[in-house]
Image (cartoon, rainbow, N blue to C red):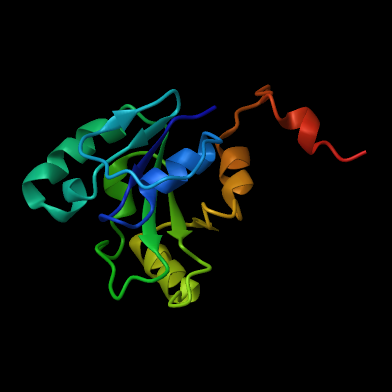
Length: 155
């Protein structure tokens, strides 16, 4: 599996998505520091919301194969400037979270991510699992076999 770092503002769903990608039970947990797991790096929202901490994010992206920019479908604005993805020096995907929230506007959030430079955008609801498999499949490398592949096999 390729390694991914999840970046986004506080409460956009980075930790919840991390739990969903790992197959864990979803529970609220405020990320206070950078958490590195096998192939997922979960970052605190304050790192992207605070100019002085942004440099730390840049350093962590070098340890990942993919950068995931997250934005909640409920956001009233985007933190990401237009055409920002080339500064990452690696593939950047967009992830729209909280797509089933009653206040969601997933189309607007996706437009913001595409404006930032994300060519590939996923829409997820980490609590229901919608869209999570697509991200897992995207992160796979040739030859990766996951424990649940047999369960998902359609005969």
